[in-house]
Figure (cartoon, rainbow, N blue to C red):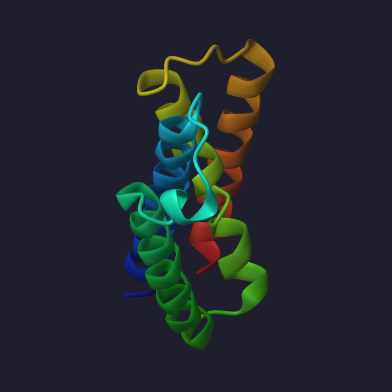
Length: 114
């Protein structure tokens, strides 16, 4: 159950970050005020996703030591890198991919402890 909650927290956080990206992209080139920006559905999706992710994260912390749980959130780094590459078509260099591989290895090692 703890692992499922960690994955859910990561997915919600990543959704929030992607929604933030879409929100700011939709504002690019527009001379709109704060009130116009507050009407963005992407902004509200980001806030909702990040808020739900926080609640799920609190449930994780009830079940696991922070020293084990927190490094698992580095899966966000992996997911966001994949989204950046395949959704936003951003260039990812070799060092970044090596970092992703190291993060995955660390999560696997810590996952065996949980």
